[in-house]
Image 1 (cartoon, rainbow, N blue to C red):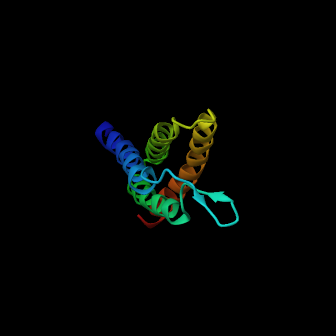
Image 2: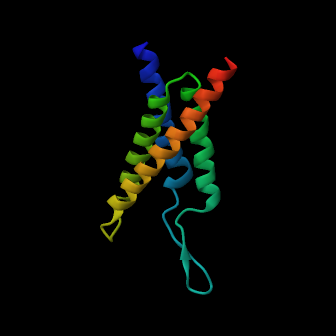
Amino acid sequence: MNEQRLLATLVPAVTALAGWAAWLGWDQHRDVHPDGSTTGPYAAWQVIGLVLTLLAAVHWSASRHHIAAATLGTTAGLTVAAAYDWSDDASGLFMVGVVLLALGSLAATAAVSATISTVRRGTA
């Protein structure tokens, strides 16, 4: 049973780390528009791709009724990836973003995991 719980934690964590690198890690530049405004560094399609990738790993773990493992694994993976990726920020405020990302991913992943587990429990 402990091996299953460990695997249910590691799969979302590794998926979050690898997903961040694949979808967001390579894009480090802001886009400057003709009016002088800037956006980025991530485009919407990159974030959507990461969310869909994470959803697959969360579904895999939560459908086995490992809600906490799915939630904590995903949150830990995203938090570590963001901290590493954003640590060279010149403003020194990268930790604010990392904390907000951790809190947001914790809340969102907990809600999604609980929903998946509840739906799967009802159909099993």
